[in-house]
Length: 484
Image (tube, rainbow, N blue to C red; front, side):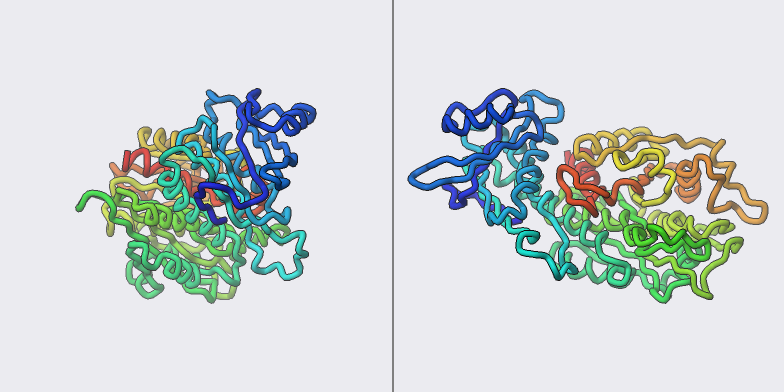
């Protein structure tokens, strides 16, 4: 979606924002009366459409409600208004929408929020849909900004970078497993991030073996697609300052391996790389907006398949840390990828703190549904900062416990640990497993995002499908805690 700032609109579709119970005084009487007759009062999410004559031309006018002025969720309401306008007119036949801020009592950041919602809601991935009718194809491709508050264009530039990151993540998560696999994930990142200033490091299979990443290699050994570890480095902060590291689980397709998943719904496992997708998108956003922080994004990329070479339930693997793992269930593979990547990150990058993101457990979906992701952390300060970033960005989190009592459930009779515990508390024992690979004194948080990377119905700022969850969360965390 193209956004441009103009002195006067050229579009015939003009939209205005309306605070609750505050229809604009300069609105044409026919529009004001129509809005009142339709019970439009400016509540959040309300839309009204009418037609009026202006300068001898008939124009299409949309009013979008943004709720009460002092509402705590003001930015979210403004995003929702922008998203609602795009959703209504995306396939309407209109090619441009003029968003008229004249007279609106908004800050530059608030105006940019409207634009962000409008752009994010307009993202669709139709490259494989060859039989769409003209009425089904998106027509709206441009937002014209009129009368914006001072500073809006600069504010929008930062939000546009964020939108680029979210859209990149959505495209990675949406692509099928025969298109996105470890090698092609890396190449997509290389192509998109060329010229951004990001340093890209790729570890191939021979290097992973030499490093002793037996847990990660064990997951990948049943696939014809070789594994990769991808590191995206952004040095925008003080020279020599320790980086914050984001780690993403990148299982590009997960059959469950020998512990094969049920066929129904297995196609959804193309998005089991949602953590890696979020890390890649966040790093792109940080680079495009020139974030003043040192950040590294690391993605562990594998495909989990059940061929004759696949690891078996009961196999024992040795992780890069030297700890041994009895693989009870080959479908609990994400933690095996993360544990080796975390060890490499700590040895190679000496980070200040680590946040990992993974579509890790079905138990998290059962617990929180599609409204929150779970956060586990060994550091209260880090956890609180992530929770705050979640509230501010809309990528919400809910904290879960870690405790020795749960950790004991992973004890093995023949190895240092099992890769799964009992069914109860599955998300917690998964986090406890990962924590065994975090060095003493290292601030770490684990985000289980299994329920939020894909949506079965449209939301305020996304179409049905990939949500791009995690990009906005990580970007806000960097803005508020590393750049603030």
